[in-house]
Length: 80
Image (tube, rainbow, N blue to C red):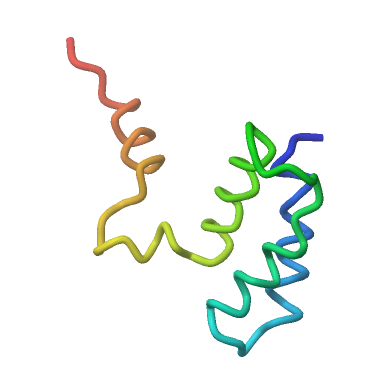
């Protein structure tokens, strides 16, 4: 199981439990729910990435595609 697979249901549960609250309150609850103690290295990066994904932060960026979509699109068109 990856770090992301481990944290995704925790994040989903917290967001569901705090539905209707402000984003600041949801983020505070997510900080409290962090399961691995020290906030550093890859587990924390996976947690932050999954929080952004589930809160829809990537989709709200000034109407731009998120970085991963840009990378994926570029991988299908190789210059010859």
